[in-house]
Image (tube, rainbow, N blue to C red; front, side, top):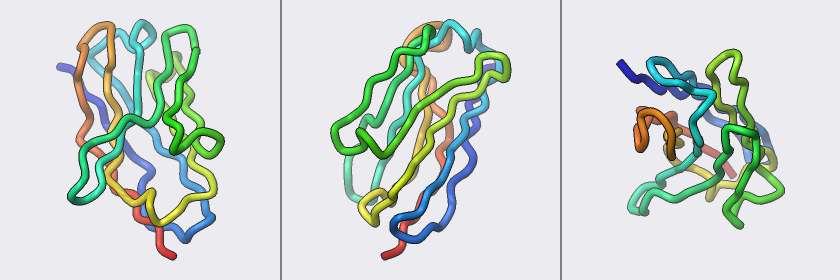
Length: 116
């Protein structure tokens, strides 16, 4: 059974930092291209960042320079380090298997709230 479990969300003041984690099970995590997405109220889900099996990364312009995606294949875990957070970053954050085994599988999300 494939599972993606996000954690690390919470309430933070503007300018603060959070580190999200996504623990994978039931899939060959090291082979997967993984991504982070978010969805704010009344907005469409948007792409934030992706990382290939080999560690190549790609970022949306809205988070480039503030967010860093990384992975630990030994622990089947995906990370998103978020710095200099802004109130507009408030959203539910999701991890996703972009390609590989269990393609297009999503986690349940973790809430991030940034206060001004």
